[in-house]
Length: 336
Image 1 (cartoon, rainbow, N blue to C red):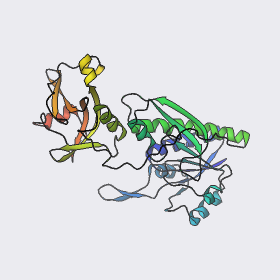
Image 2: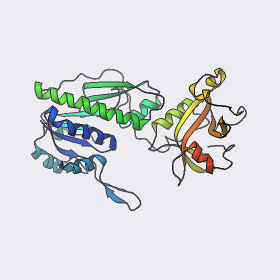
Image 3: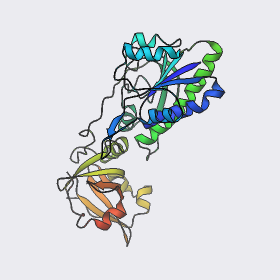
Image 4: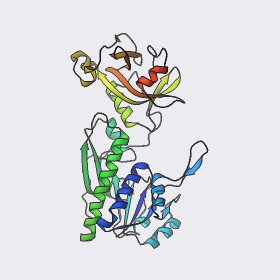
């Protein structure tokens, strides 16, 4: 079976790499890759291929980077005589003329329990909603966004520290394994079978910098931690410190209930907590792990936010220890 793969970001590259290595065992060939055009990156704005395109070029797979999936693009893809289109994180909807070129149509890897969290940011939505599990669904490609039949799926429990990058990596690997099995079965049966989606659909959209802004007055401490995990790396949760952006990369919640009951793994290693009762939300305090080890706490709705990694504008990402070594008078600052 001949396959065209479509995708762009790092997570999609992980899937492509696993499929590339599975070609012999599952009896298929990746005859081409479709990815987004190179983008200007870095200080010198050099045109850089997507991670998917870069991997394909390294392996000698023909790469196509069309601006549009139009007749010109179809004329380049059709001579490859591909039987199946496999897609993960390409960002474009394939039309009927495009899909008609493939004997078995297309498969799409989507990291959610469809029809929940259709759209482009399902992993972030999963974390923000406080879902206990992350799911990867393999669906047939349909003419409407994420409305295909479910061919296979799997799920894993989400731990308290997993961020969007971690969950996308898991989905990219597990999804590739599921797709490999589907292809192998299709070679044997000559068909791809799925079941229609059931349940109430929900939708996700493009994430903006404004979405990642921490609202100290209204976001409770648990939701702030989920924001930090959901928006990790891009665009990254942030707030203002003395009118300058401050990014937060890792954090834990110490809820009022934990403090009242004095029972949590976070509290077990803490020597002392500051008195924070009358202070306004967003106020920074220092707690003690030991007489020589301060850590950063921020008063939030429903408890305290313990910041573990953060970054000032123009500086490197730092652990709380590294940050406090150079941050004078940070205690008492009110983050906005």
